[in-house]
Length: 90
Image (cartoon, rainbow, N blue to C red; front, side, top):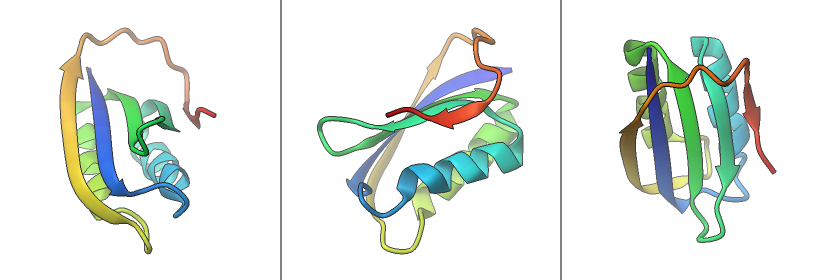
């Protein structure tokens, strides 16, 4: 099991990017959350199997229609198992 922080910059707010990430994460059986940041990025903390997280990262690089992805960065963090589901944080 792995935990990764995904940060996405570009035109990613106001285009249903968080809902897109949530839907893909749930389809992949991942847990964690996604949220907007004050600096107009989208950030996700994701836990699950490495291959499934890698698939989510690839989805993040594409984004929903209307999103313009400039950069996706990832940081591996210690796995905690604290999440029971994947949700949008407001």
